[in-house]
Picture 1 (cartoon, rainbow, N blue to C red):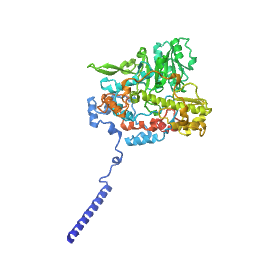
Picture 2: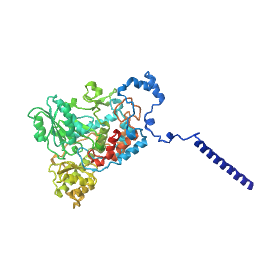
Picture 3: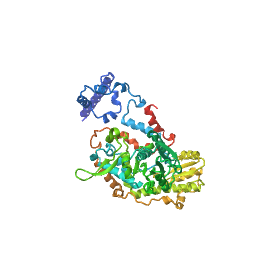
Length: 588
């Protein structure tokens, strides 16, 4: 036993000595340069190129050979004139060397952390909203929805086309106008498109277009700028001052509810405009239209607006889906696309894009637009928001928003502040004396208000407003304890919109009345997705400004609150991250 133990000990000692010599030998080899670790091997391996440019050298060589050139450089030399070719790389500062996916996300997270997500009461066409998680996860964050090409090819787009048809139905129902397109780019440009329609209806013979001073400022700005290029004269004035006696007015634009929140009776105004042979455009709010008389019922010719507050985050101003609705007789002058119901080769119902009278792939050199005049993904999100909530759910959200505004107005009155006498839906413009002082006090408490003028502030409420927010607003306006709370005040407050209350039904189609639980909605979304071709199925051999080439790591940040929940008119000290994003890559 003892001999065996001694032999075992000697064996272990020999093994240990051998291991030591092996380590020393490896270290010596490394130090002598026989074999080392390449620095490149220590760099991050999650680069964009190998994950997103999938063609290998052999495949590139085969494609170049098929074109008859000896190399890729030779092909470029033959096709790209030297005068427009860069000879040096772009100087993008710290971005010049490129970033890996993880570095890119870290960089964006650092930018996001410089933004401040304050409570927004600015309104002005942009509102907080809750995107239902079932739509967030299964549509906005789902490549089966966001990587498809524009639905020009109907047989591989039936899912999206169905959802866009739902969008059109939602718009026609809420506006009470019989025809709507499948979305536009934003509310301001939709208003400018409506102005163009009015000029077209008048066959270009009436050069004036009136714009109400109570429209959103950004809408007025875009329309007046667009008018210059169209040879129109955009006249901004109070609607009571509109003069049609010269028979030279093609159309008028009013906001309903107004940018100050007021709801006005436009019945007599519309009659006067029509008597002057001018068309009436109403820029309106979808959530408000669940409570107030729709434009089609008081004679409007065209209705425009944004679908943003139906589930699409503010995103510092966009992108969002806009809408345009009108009557059948003006359908040939509508911008964008209309989804129509047709039949397939077997005689079964099928959907297709119709009435694409403006776009390049139809009109070629005669196109009146060289841009893709739609926001299909975001229009689908807004339509699905309406499908998920249904008419009763939307009414509930609207009543809550209006209730918040009503309690706020009552509290302001209790504090001795001037409140509007006209009905309102979600926005209350209050006379506070020194508006700048109040805005600054609210800002110090993490709340953004809109300074309407020197004496007035506008306060807009939305789906994300909490009752505790009302108490914080009252404290700012009172300069301390107001002596009451929103909860104590609410039972004595009468909400609603008075004589403007909507009487007609909307969203009565079965699609808006059956998918209100998450599992039902999930199955509906899956059925739609399965009818479409996207990058989850195959390559799409077409090129366009679609989202199909965006890496997943590039899509992740769009739903971060620091990017998604920022109002476009938030104070500059709250958007330092956005400003860095906009200026840094350009060397600013």
